[in-house]
Length: 173
Image (cartoon, rainbow, N blue to C red; front, side, top):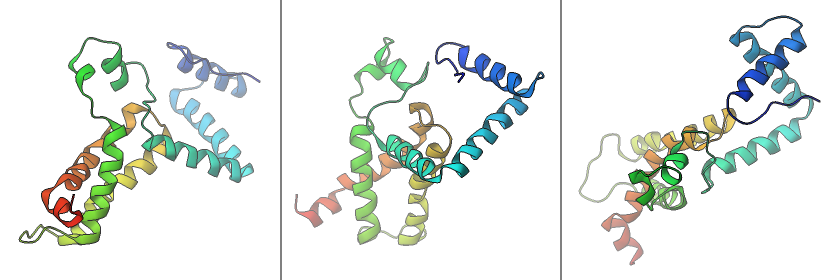
């Protein structure tokens, strides 16, 4: 069984080489992609339980605190380079639980008294659907810190709702 190497430019080169060996001819980038997509669908259809288990594991990775990084990702610049990201202590480990708490509380109780947001509770619910839609799309394609970064933006808003004074009064913190 032939495999794709994981470092440097080797993955792209190996993927092309393996697809071309299978086809017996030179392939374009689109044809290489179609080759591996067909292999993935063939595997998922022939082993639906394994495919579902893999999808659920990838979905869990989307919300997990550890950064699954690629070269030149957020984790690379935060840990390996002398940038300001090194000093930011808030990350997915805090934003995910607070974001879900804030979204849940806001969806359950509605907007704070005295405010009249556009769309009300249902407008907010529609906006909050960005979180599961982003999570599902990342889990379907490729889980890494780079691709799940856009998930942290709405979770920051949810974390803000969790810390809003009206919520603290309701919970009597």
